[in-house]
Length: 154
View 1 (cartoon, rainbow, N blue to C red):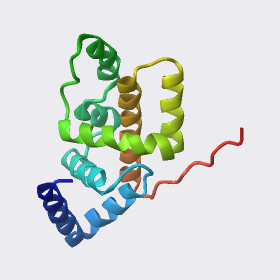
View 2 (cartoon, rainbow, N blue to C red; view 1 turned 45 degrees about the horizontal axis):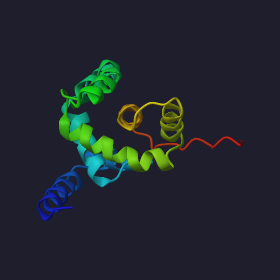
View 3 (cartoon, rainbow, N blue to C red; view 1 turned 90 degrees about the vertical axis):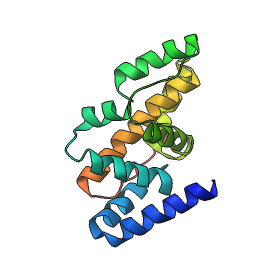
View 4 (cartoon, rainbow, N blue to C red; view 1 turned 60 degrees about the vertical axis):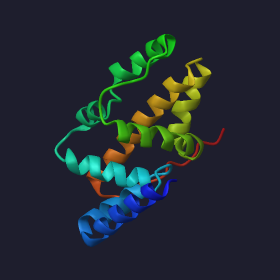
């Protein structure tokens, strides 16, 4: 991580720590498996900016709505990238899916199912990022820490 980014994160963390509600919301977001401090701070900013948004609106504002996800495959074929929505948030979520697809059971199941179905990496990770966003939004709205699902015995 660049020194400039570290300073920006430290400044954001200091501002969040001054406000009790924001501090609690950040702690709740960080309870989600796969969300680190940078992604949690980015999500907190996003959710506070669009505090009245519902699930569908949050997904659309992030640029991860189902229409975008279905177009990802077309973009890959043409060598284009996804556009629209909050680019910084989408980048953070996309990177967070690297960890979430490994350690978060629901995300891992979705990612594995899509990969097994022959979907390209970018499509599977975009769908996983959308699911991670929805989990984070639900946790943020409820104010309750993330409850890890019990892994099914195979």
